[in-house]
Image (spheres, helix red, strand yellow):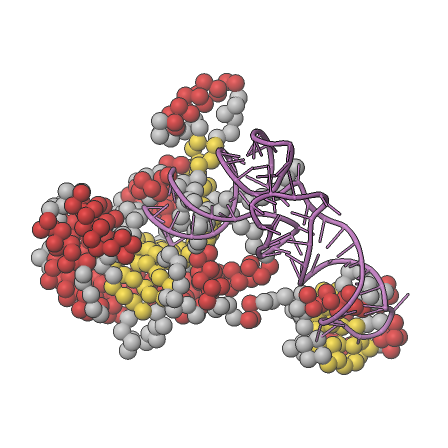
Length: 459
RNA sequence: GAGGUUGUAGCUCAGUAGGUUAGAGCGUCAGUUUGUGGCACUGAAGGCCGUGGGUUCGAGACCCAUCAGCCUCCCCA
């Protein structure tokens, strides 16, 4: 038997890591709660048809499918084989798989809203912090199991929601100490560009092409567009669009000049102006985050219809650490039309990697044992145990060395675990009703009465 | 899905052009030290060299396959 291993792209988390991750989770949760969002949890698995077709062609490929049970039952054998042939020809078959692991938190949320529509008070604001799974090839900042922290509002068209979600992004990253760019764009502006270039059907081609801008450069983007039947004049417009620059105000002005004749573009510009207007420095915001309009931002998720978000950490080589946007009719996919929504997502695993790389975790996240009681014999440890429980009742994190071992060994144990205080209670102390408290960091100790121990300041 | 790269002790890595019994540091354990740690010294344990084939008199080294990690593209958090 060889050593056990982990499925590709999954990880175990040791104590240190768990504490640091919890620090991120609780920061995000606290901000979500502050903005009036309520928690929701949904199952790890969903019916396959709930997920399929929601994330685009690439997304479908990355959904982890769960094999049905009982495939090997003789009475199912023919059906299983037929289903397998279906799958081999690129189709899904319910006789082989009808469930899958959740791919994100937005679609399960939409499913939940559709199922509970009558019971929910609209606008409905929920947050959700759970793992998601993607059958992707692992690499830097990319895992097959990772956590998302989502906040969504459904049942409201108000741009005030976008304003608040922007503020949530800014607040969370400020609390975590990560300098970020909150990049904003609007699908409506992209749609206007597509319209200008010959029709909405070009939207996907154009957006995926311009999304590659910073990777393959302007020339290649143009080349790629030409291959997709975009005329020279239209490419010229795209070229101008892509070279929009300056501060946010200047960028908006240029886009206005370029696409202002389209109503959709006007609308998109107005929406962005609205959100930016709320985040002026004189408006109670002291954002360490910069809000940057990026008209080349074209998030792949095909259900976005309005403002889209992407978060980029400054000073590190890392994909986006958050994203989101507005969707007009997500629950329409599940039979409940006309429920607009907007949401954002935090990628905790990438945030963790960024904070680790930049050394941003505060020293205080180590919440290990504070006090180690030495074990110096049967009678001694009985007494020590009683005293220890008193401290624990006061919320002090304690442990007693389980064996009656040599001093040396117990000291080294405290060192290894970075336990700052030890309590020595040996035969002499037992007799005199005392105990010795030693501060290992300062290397000082004092003898106090056992009754005074529970009010000792372990700091 | 395509490509690159790595895989030797618990961890980080050496291992020369294929040649005896596979090395170091750190860590672990024991001792110097049975009531005062971090240091030092002494000693010990721990490896089918990722896995399976192949070439060779001989493979940790070379070839093929496979698995896993990391990285790039696609896409994404």
